[in-house]
Length: 371
Image 1 (tube, rainbow, N blue to C red):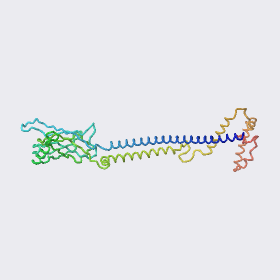
Image 2 (cartoon, rainbow, N blue to C red):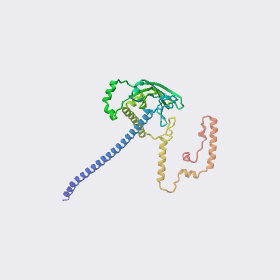
Image 3 (tube, rainbow, N blue to C red):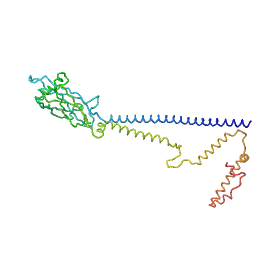
Image 4 (cartoon, rainbow, N blue to C red):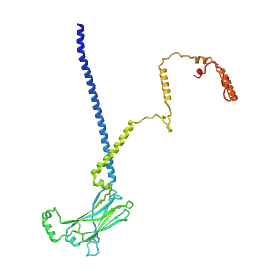
């Protein structure tokens, strides 16, 4: 009966042990999976943070370069004319031609970039009136002045309204009559006059003021604007005409360069070997060898062993006993006489043969004394 009960207990215990082993393995597998997932999440977060940071730095570097390298592409300002009317002659209403002074400074900075070519043009909004049509061609003169009042550049251009026959003017009036009556359109023409086609500002005498003068007393003008457009070439042409492609290429280049620097720094930290001070000299020789390390280790082991030994009465060695009963003064006299005999024998023989014969036996061994 006892054997049968033991067998039954053994049969019952084996499945429980198997279940426990399976549960233990399952627990270990779950823990390993959780740790791996956690490690993967942490690594992904770190990598994504580094990538985002590098992208921001790359974009900031490209934006700084674009802002500092690219000048202003266009500049426009309204032109307001003035003239004198206090003429001495009663037949003349205007004493001078319409003149306008334009400042080429914004926020105490020059509008024109040194070394950059610009196109400067004047836009005139003129009424399509009989006076302007009868006037025909007129001249426009422009001059640029520096801060000290010196003239830097000047130009003279002509302007004229587009010709329209009477029939074409009548038909256009009838066609746009509703717009003219409602005020949505006006009978006017816009005249563009190019003053400078390729103007480059001098860095030694930069332009600060532009003076525009219309050489006609009868010209009629609604409004006028001065436009300055930059003529880009080379890298500036690509950056201005293809901004999206240039931005992608610039940010990508900066990102790749920063990534390489980061990877090189990270690998250097991983593969860094910490050399102890004095291990390598400038001539490439080791300042200490393996024997010194072994001796140091042995001394450390001896110190540890001596520290581990229990305190007890001091043990006397034969060397200590012999040294206690030995006359130091006699020994010194004997050693002095022996050294004198050795020197005399070496001088006489020249080969040192009599040195051994002149030695006397000491009452104790030399090795023990030296120890």
